[in-house]
Image (cartoon, rainbow, N blue to C red):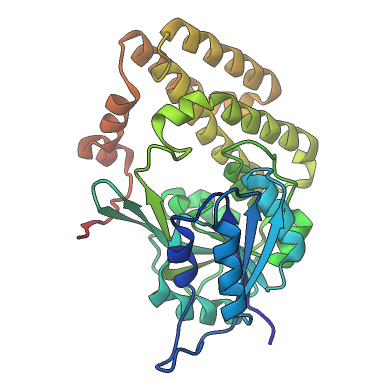
Length: 355
């Protein structure tokens, strides 16, 4: 049977979480047999030193129609994707981290949708689940027509209706398209998912949103790369990814259509702003943070003045916040303020509490 999608599971020392992740792909009948086999799950064990590989191999043995396991030398999240894409057999590919999981009730609808489309990119809603507060937030697209295929020009005209799902957690790529348009992701760094969500997508001729929530993104763990402290400690990783993306754009810009260039600049400018927040508001020595920010901004200004112009005003605002001793947490609270979001015409995302 041809597989509609290859789910790539990025697994490193994930023995505490991987069972929950892999179980989320099992739709069983009353006798315990699989009743949904239209996909494969490719678990890439990235040199784990715990029981991650052992657990994954148990699933491969029990459900050979679905699970495959690859073990490789540790190279980081980007290396997992680089490796797995070569092995993917599905019509589409979707990356899932081993400490996250999918919404099992949405899986069949998602597969039905993939069977009926040939879009370069598919978007799905996703949820964040905070392990500390138990808060669930729906991140979704806001569209009237989910049967329509959209272009990057359409997205530029109505960015805030789709931008939250143009991310690692919301994107599914057509495998043939990704292999043609993808790039080798930077290895041995965090935050390379920004390359993954930007570089192939800027070439997309068709984007198909599905009105279903597929991915559950686990947050609230102090060990995660997205935790404020870890982002500051790994700020050089973010800088490395930014410069790699700048370099790619400079070399390939002529091949990217105008709407794709606008998409690329939008995504890259947002990553740069994230870096500026971290170094300007998260640095224990504010003067050092301002120096690091200025160095990067001077380079961005030399390499792409359009990107510089997109972030210049926000940079000035963040400089003021730096001198005013505003912290990252305080800044985020400002961004979450209802009045601020009303002024910015930002979409409201549904929040829930779980037990």
